Amino acid sequence: MTTPAGTTATAAQVTAAQVTAWRNAVVIAYGASGLAFASWVSRLPAIRDALDLTPGNVGIILLCMTLGSFASVSMSGLIVLRLGSKRTIRTGSIMVGAGLLTTGFGTTVLANPMATAVGLAIIGLGTGSWNTASNVEGAAVERAVGRHIMPRLHGAFSLGTVAGAGLGALAAAVSLPVFWHLAAAGAVVAVSVATAASWFRADATPVPGERSYSPDNFEDPTTGPIPVIPAAGTAEAPLDNKRRIAQAWRERRTLLLGVLVLGLALAEGAAGDWVALGLADGHGQSDAAGAAGYGLFVTFMTIGRFAGTVLLDKFGRVPVMRWCAAMAVVGLGIFVFAPAPWLAYVGLAAWGLGASLGFPVGMSAAADDPAKAAARVSVVSTIGYGAFLCGPPLLGLLAEHVGILHSLLAVMVMLAVSFVLSPVARKAA
Image (cartoon, rainbow, N blue to C red; front, side, top):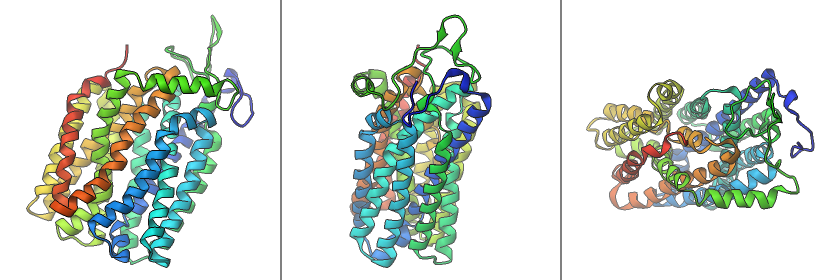
């Protein structure tokens, strides 16, 4: 089988050590994505102040990132299947690094909202396909290690957001210019991911259909090599890839999984973009305290993701998804209506736990059939990111009329839908 880079991989070449290196490299990719996201999100209050933006204006510049991300994620299935996840992730991380640099330059040096919006759009273009490719790569390494690790991979993303939020709060506390902060974050992201991608193996690993396999031997001892789908970048791949994507968009379970993920993704995305401002404007906290509040949210989301494997093994996907949706509703309600700031932080903790497992469980459920994983993951990612990306800017426009805190109540409607749709996460027969 030929990889996008033109190298050949056989079953015997995939050893346990290579799988371990592969897993660690994927962890780095997830963590760097979280670091990139939290770096600019945690500085939104500073960006708003530097550019003198209203909540509606903030929503508009966030919409630029949304448009870039949605354009990228909507094409991500074809991009990943055509180029391979390794090249997609590398290219996306470099684009995100450049976008962070541009966002900081537009905010601090030019003080121009248009330049900042361009930077966010570049971040969006890089993020959409990068994240879909990471989920494809993550699903492949999950199958290779033979146990549920997707929640922990997304936990690595959350650890990245914790680090990014913490550094953002520190940068805000010492009044570090947004440019220098985001330029440094962008360099770390681009270099670390481009290096880690050397160990990715999804593009060169056989797809075993429904059969289980050992990371030390991908060959069936009785029938020989397991049949594989065409490698990304081969002559026969493009037409076959289009059929896979089109078929996935017609599958009822795949579409409902996307809607399930959509509600919990909106809860996560709304927190990312509006918690810091909600604490600052709605609960009278400082910019640094607002950034720290987002750090608290992602800390508890991280706890939920690392505990997710145990919960899923014990209770199964459906009860865990119901618990997540209910917990997110409770935490969001406490955050919005808290009569004292300390109680709002309690709400953030519950909200973070509730939002923790939506994406990882949705990605694992979409990848139940390894042979169709890439197409189905891209569809579920596209639907989920629709809420993750489009929701927060629209909440900004709603906040113009009802305030930041009360605009977040709209998220509860989609969380209720996710609660009802929880049974679709059950493992496919």
